[in-house]
Amino acid sequence: MQFFNHYSALIVPALLFLIAVMVVKRRGGQKQQWLILGGVTLVYIAVWFGLRPVASRLVDDGGRTVLLEVQSPYCLGCVALKPAVDRLENELRGKLRVRRVDIQSDVGQKLVTEYGIEFTPTFIFFDTAGKEQWRSVGQLDAARVRATLTPR
Image (cartoon, rainbow, N blue to C red):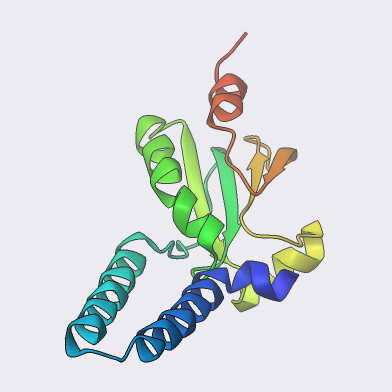
C-alpha cells in the first residue's frame, strides 16, 4: 500500500492511459482519437509539473514553529494539497515555517524511521522548542494550524 501511496501520481495516470489506448484501438484508432489522447497526456504532464510538491531546504528555524510536510512528488494526495499548503504558508508568513521533505530522499528516509511515518502526505506540527505537538496524515488541518498559532 505504501508503494501505491507514494507513487499514485504515476500509477493512476499510467493505468488510465493504458485503458485509453485500448479503447482507442478497439474503436479503430483514428488519427483524431490519438491526437486527443496525446493532448490529454501532455496536459496532465504540464499540470503535474506545475503542481508537484518540491522538497524545501532544511535550515535551522531559530525558535520558529514548523509545519513539516513529509511528501512525495509522485503522490496524488501531495499534489492535490500543495495549493492549500502554499496558501497557508503565505498567510502565516513570519509565524510559521513550512518544511517539505521528500520521503524518497535520505533525509526523508531518516524521518520515516524516526517518526514512524507510513503514508504521504504526513504533516507534523512542531512548537518553537522543536517538540512535536500534533500530526495529521493524508490531509492538512489548516484550522488546527491557525488555532495552534493563536494565543488563547
